[in-house]
Image (cartoon, rainbow, N blue to C red; front, side):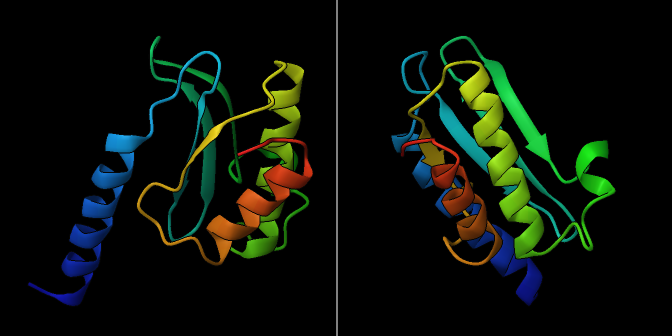
Length: 122
């Protein structure tokens, strides 16, 4: 096994461990974060119904034009602000944060802090 496979395996183990404890409901949906090498994505999910209530990513047209790079912490902050605004439109105030097995550092941390500044509580 190579280094990349080991990193993926440990991230998936962390993700499974986190998801065994976090479950989104109608009262407290789950804010799920996924980061790829190039983009970052955030979804607010109601696991009871299996529906996505709101989503935001660096792939969206309104963000693509204004971002210098879609894969940095500045872009993650913009996605965090956008997901908080969309949650506010749906009257969602409190969420359970699911970092998806990624360490709470860098882009994931920037997204979370921007979402908090935008009014989400977790």
